[in-house]
Image (cartoon, rainbow, N blue to C red; front, side):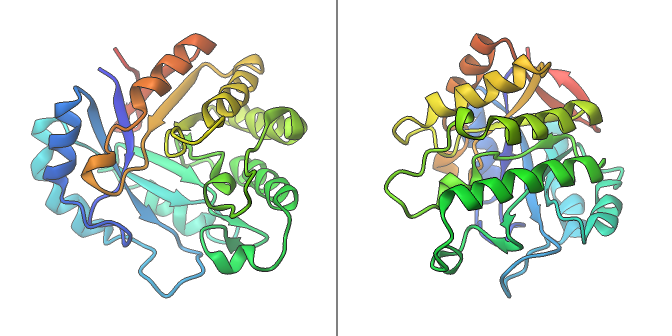
Length: 257
């Protein structure tokens, strides 16, 4: 079974989805499901950036017998790595995505970030450099999330990020992952955009050429209609490159059947 390992429900501040909705959507598609509620100890908003982790594990434990896996998406920063490592050590956790949401110390998500006039090249360069740094310094996550995050929110007409244009920086990230025994996520959030899949194919092909063998797959869904979106296509992409889709149970990697 292929797993969607990146899904947010109402324990994330930016989702209202109930776990039953996510489970039903995944079941309809024949997918396994791992939730990944947000934990960001450093962010640019007054919204709640850290899920009620205790409540999450206590309440959603009732769904484990139905096959639901419980994960977290932890924002990686150098400043918060100690508390993040403590959170990731919770024995109730199946899976931990490590994600970078910041460039130049601010969240790429907000329009105010892009209004400063920073070029896409500068944003991507800083973002990839920081991914390599935190991957080296943070040993508590399982899979590195959404490597194409800057493209998601860039307001420019051409927001594609090509592997060839940033090869050295991507390779630094991949080398840090492989040195630490971590894997990387194929995030399908942008799969419907022009050229996105081709650009991502080249990125993950670069990961494979350096020795990467495993990937997690994630829709990054925040509502039921998005659960599993693009996951089958991501699985086909992975297999074509030579990568094996995996998921984690109690922090142990399992190759998807």
